[in-house]
Image (cartoon, rainbow, N blue to C red; front, side, top):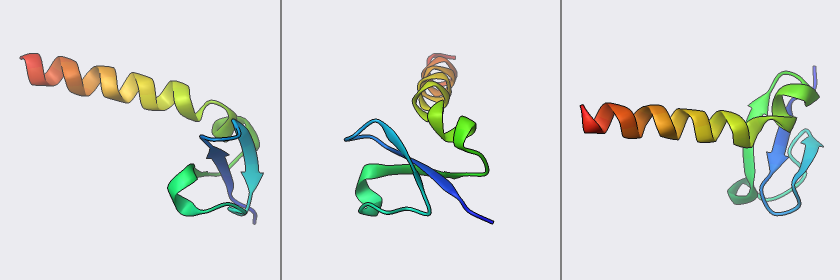
Length: 54
């Protein structure tokens, strides 16, 4: 079963991590999940910042 990664340099989804790990976010089970990786990261960071304020 393939894994999908989001490349932060090229802004493309990669199947089975073709680039250096320092450029990738993942793994994700589907291409669609990987496509939305930055949105997930942004939402998680906002939650963490909110928790730090409390």
